[in-house]
Image (cartoon, rainbow, N blue to C red; front, top):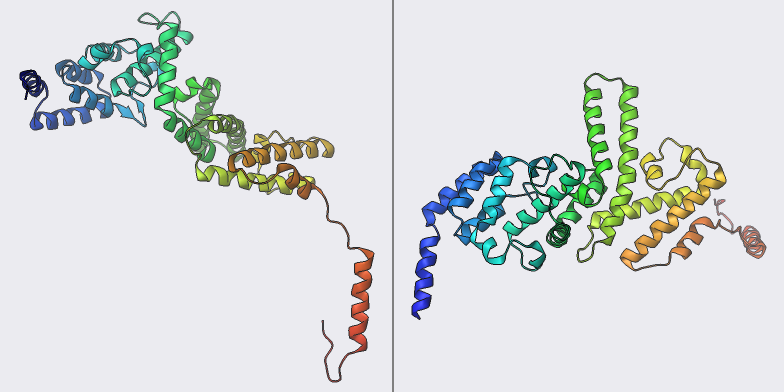
Length: 353
């Protein structure tokens, strides 16, 4: 072994804490992350800033639901969060790789740079909404673009998970994803509807609760259509199997409505489906038929693109074309066969059906 390797190993052993110290650090991290104590996290980062293992461990423990803990606008500009981010920039890894996010490749993932990218994005979003209340200088346009590039590459699986929850279970996405996709109005409206529903459940009338429920279904149905466009545009990740099953069920419901447009006014018709595909039940029959056929064509084409099987035009023709009546020759043959059977009935046989 060379003398330089021995010296580097000796320095590394002094820099990295032992097993007992790591156990104590892990317990402190659990307590600090559970209570959002950013001052304690900053103290650990400052104390072990020369230890690559400990700083990476702190960055990993700060991931919550796939994202760093500072994925909200209010948390990104707090004084304790800003102080902690200064300690992150003072670690050995960040000093070695550099502070500039534009020079970081997406293939070189590190939880500390995940924190830096998320904080840069949230501070930039906060500065767009509150230009006068920003405690520090706004990030540059190149740094904000680099943070978007890194977060999109590192959290693509989290995007798929959140969008699937919105589509399949009507779960409100995180504030970060709403800001990233430009859904601020939908995000705040969903939270206001949730608060109104909670208030009406305590002392509201049934009519009021039903009205809020219809408003929530209408809001999430339109939001769901936007989420489907984004989910189907994400490359490199397979779509959930429940998503394809859901679209298949909706296509079957639309096929039934195409065959029987008058059934839209029935009580069993799902209003969410009408809200989602822009079908107005108050319009005339001809307009409803056009809306239903357009919705069926679009949905069937999407399923063909996802699964790669079948022709949408042939299926629409099979749905919309009525069945032809039996031919006259077939009717004559059936009558002739019936007469023959009656003429040659054997003795003792009972009349059949």
